[in-house]
Length: 132
Image (cartoon, rainbow, N blue to C red):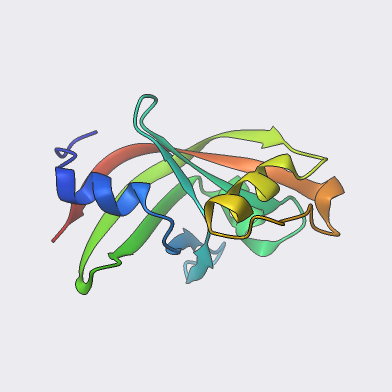
């Protein structure tokens, strides 16, 4: 990581808040979507659940750069921006990580989604952290 992980940034990344994940489309346009995520400070990564059939996955196959922005749940004018790149795609055909994230985000009864056969875990290696 090129920036210090402050306590403020750590608190936002550890909270079950929605992030906005940006990827680059093939022709240069940016695609941004709200995403569940889990921060792993020990490995310097962030993990997302997704499918191998959607546009965001295809964007990352063409260009692995990605940026996550998450708002401070106590003050939406404060945020963290994390830049990095896709370093690993882990098959998750049972949707177990989707269930894990659903429970992290407050749904104790979360079940695997209908598209679980196409589920993957996207692993983002953190390269830079910024925000306010």
